[in-house]
Structure formats: C-alpha cells, structure tokens
Amino acid sequence: MTHPELNTILEDIVTIAVQAGEAILEIYEQDFEVVQKEDQSPLTQADLASHRIICDALAALTPDIPLLSEESASIDFKTRSGWSSYWLIDPLDGTREFINRNGEFTVNIALIENHEPVLGVVHVPVSAVTYTGVAGQGATRRQTGSPPQTIAIRVPCADPMVVVGSRSHANPVLTELLKQMGNFELVSMGSSLKFCLLAEGKADFYPRLGPTSEWDTAAAHAVVSAAGGKIVTLTGNPLQYNLKESLLNPEFLVIADRNRDWISPFADYLSRQLRNQ
Image (cartoon, rainbow, N blue to C red):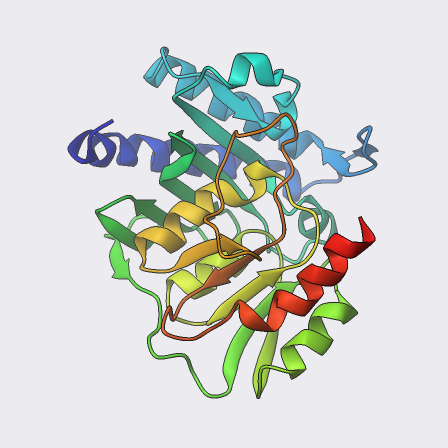
C-alpha cells in the first residue's frame, strides 16, 4: 500500500483493535479458564475471542491480504514465503499479565510489507490507550474518544538511561551487561508496552535477550520506527519478518537515541552465544 492508503486504513484498524479489546475486558472481569498450548504457554478464552474478532474484520476489510495470527500460526513457510504483504496479529499479547490481572496486556495488529512492518496498532484495553505507527507518517498515542497526539522517541538519552525489561522474563545476564553501560534505571513492564514507552519518549533502551515470536513484536515495531527509533539484532541488522520457517525472532535491541553505541556492549555476549551453539 502507498502511504496515503495506509493512513486511510489506519482508523479501521484502530476500531478493530478497540473492539477486540472490549471483548477481552468482558472476559477479564469474570472468572476465566486457562489452558496450556503445546509450547506450554497459556491460552484463555480472551485470546480466542480477540482472534476471531480481528480475523473476521480484516477478512472483510482487506480480503486479498493474508493473515497470520498467534492463534493460527500453522501456515507453512512455503505458503508464507510467497506473501509480499500480510497482516501479523497477536490478539492478546501478555497473556500472563492478563492472568495476573495487572493490566499490562495489549492487542497487536501489524501490516507487513516486504519483511518490514509498515503499519502497527497497539491497543491497551484496561487503559483504553492506543498507539499507532505508519511508515513515513509518524506515530501517535490516543485515549479512546480523544484525538491522537503525535509521539516521538527521546533524544538525547536520559541520564541515567531508562531501560525497560520484561516483567515475566527476568534475565540476570542482561542485568550484568547493563551494569557495564553506566547508570541506568530499570522499568519492568509486560507485553509490547515496553516498545511503546520508548516510542513516547519515556524510556531509552529495550534489550531482549530471550525468545519472542514475530507476532509479539511487529505492531510495536511499527510504532517505534514511526516514532524515530529502531529495532536491530545483536549484529546491528534490522529486525525483519517472514524470512524463515521458524517464527521466532533473534535476540534484539530496541533503541531510541541512535547517536549512542548500544550494540558494542553486547558483542562479547553474542560471541559467547555463537561459540556455544
């Protein structure tokens, strides 16, 4: 799609994400069942309800664009490799946060074109806040019912730098690496909200040294990029999508201030990882 076309479709995607969020909240406010998927990650009725709403709405809105969701991830790479564009969805990112009822979960919808996220919507059901990012058009934050406000990453980096980390996946190795980088304040956060803190200028760095899937990152990746940040692998290459059979991401760094060298401190760590393979 062209940039004007992306802007035209953006409001429809925001509406879909909000509708999915409303369905999630209906279940959030009740007793709900939790089952384990094959990979032992949790699944709730809320994941499935959101999945159905988003898939049905996108199929009606853009019937010619294929869709990949966490809850329908069995599409083989032979099929996916022929897609020049597709929707990549996480109907409920932060299921553990949902189960723990801390509010830090999101609805994520991204449009991928040529392996890059060009449009992303991250909706936070509990706070009714929605983040958007469109390639070449900027990023916004809006409260449901209010006009969108433009957001951007923070430059220069704060002192001490503000680093965001996973609430559910603490990593002692990462803590030691961060100590080598100088003074920092660590903020723990669930789901794709970590990316959004960088996008709105409230944090400087999010290093992810652990497994994530492509649907976990795509929508928020679009928001960060549109806000002026970047997401790279530990070798400094851009994080890209749908390039291989596995849907797992490599480890990556989310960076606000591009003027600082964030990658070098992780070089030794990466070398050790490669030697151990």
